[in-house]
Image 1 (cartoon, rainbow, N blue to C red):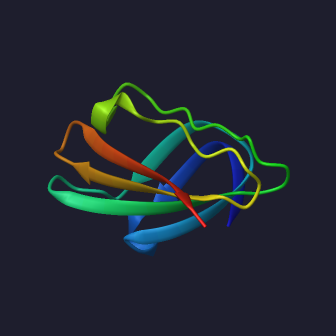
Image 2 (cartoon, rainbow, N blue to C red):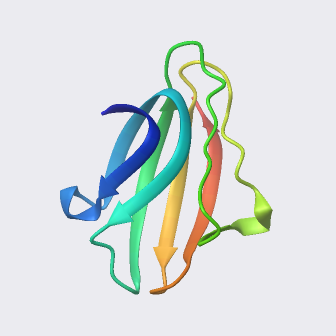
Length: 96
């Protein structure tokens, strides 16, 4: 769907989900995710782009990299592995 603000995604709706951003993401919650499970979110910059992603401290990013692409229509992929406490994330940016 098209989302912004505080986003809550349910892993029971699929392990790969697409989101078009209509504004900044101020928080991200994932429900129904158990330890040793993974989840992928495909994020597309909607509108004029330049929307940001903010997550809590329980989200850790490879190399600390968590900046989304900024161009309108650009696509990024957020891959997440959950160990029961921490969400380990890899953000791949700039799909065209």
